[in-house]
Amino acid sequence: MSIEGSQSMCTKRAAYGCALVAIAMTLGTADAVAGEYAVANCQADPLNFSTQAFDNFATRGMKIRRACNPEGPGLRGLITSNVVRAGRVARGAVALATITAPPGTRFTRFRWAGTARRRDCRYALQLWADADDIAPIPMINVRANRRCPRPAFAQAAGYRSRTFDVNGATQIVQRVICVGGNGKNYCSSRSSNYLRTYKAQVGIVDPLPPTASIIRNTPLARGEWVSGTQPLNYDASDNVGVRRVDAIAAGESAGFEARPCAFAKPERTFADRIPCPNGPGHVTVQTTSLQEGTQSLAIEAQDTAGNIGNSSGLTVRIDNTAPARVDVAVAGGETWRNRNDFLAIWTNPAETDRAPIAAASYKLCAAGNSTCSLGTEPGGDISRLSIQVPAPGEWTLSLWRRDAASNETEAAASVPVTLRYDPGASTARF
View 1: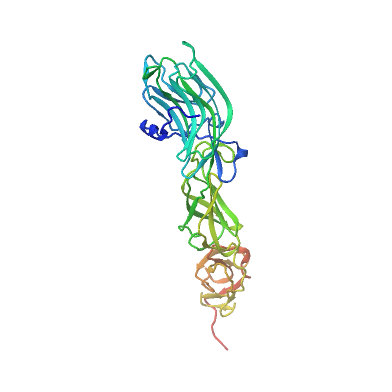
View 2: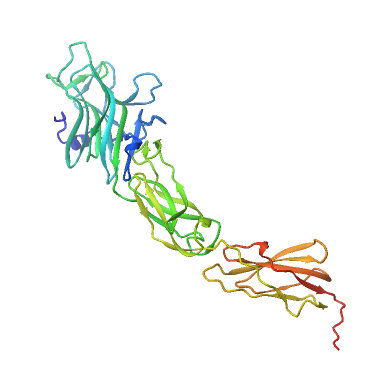
């Protein structure tokens, strides 16, 4: 079957100034597989009755109606028709809606339901699929000047949901066009002549994986020693949009971002043909779910169709364990002294592939009561602490270490040592 008026369809659409319109539609969730997704509009999108996937084009005297919510006045659906008014429209006047597959993708199956009506037989009501490298696939083709209604009567037909094999097509076109005929180069506009879609579904197969890269502007991405929850920034893009991004180390996800997509139903059923965004994003990485030490981390991007693309790996350094307890001594012993000048010393044990020591935290308490003060002394691989006590008397000092990943715990404090200060104490020796 040929499509009436289809000679050089692309040329004709260009002549009409036709921006190809997305009727983006959907297969059921159960039909979606990796590399394939579905897009739903009109009543096939029960969440929103969306028409955001549609573009449309109509010449003078023709129109597109977007009224897919079944609750409302007038004829409901995606409707291509003439404007009802006294007079006529010229031959070639057209209203059309077209879905165009995203670059690099093809359609698989098309499920459609709708109605058709015409009073003037000089209009053609058509629905077809095609691509540059395949012949048109007719689905609905009410030809002009064929099987015309009796004078003063109208033709009408309803089409239940049916599935068409449109494998390989890259566009689906719904069109009402005035062809003219019987010596007339115009059509009447006194009554409505339309093709209406109220359910439309299309499967889109996409073989292309997304691309992704990590932006090295956070401590984790720069390879610094880190612990706990860490931000990770990335950039990802795809021909059909990026749905989710995971931070992956040793084959395990340590955090993900689900990107905002235009869903029509759960899983891979959407309200637009490119429903998920491209561009930068942010993953919150839970380093506690990763092994400790130096390792490689990458991001895994999943596109709308479920295809996976990975970034290059980068080196990250994870340490979530606070430094262990060390034994502390007072240089010169714990005897009384008349100078307020004490030095606590200790030895840092060697640790392989762990965050280096970056500071020492301490607690200084008056002996016999609970009056204490806290402090921190920074220093790479620090192993001594010079300290003064607030006043003469006996004081106890305990300390614990903090590493470059900010791990520390007072539970690992050293056994307290005693600092004794008496400015009047004798320094005589016998």
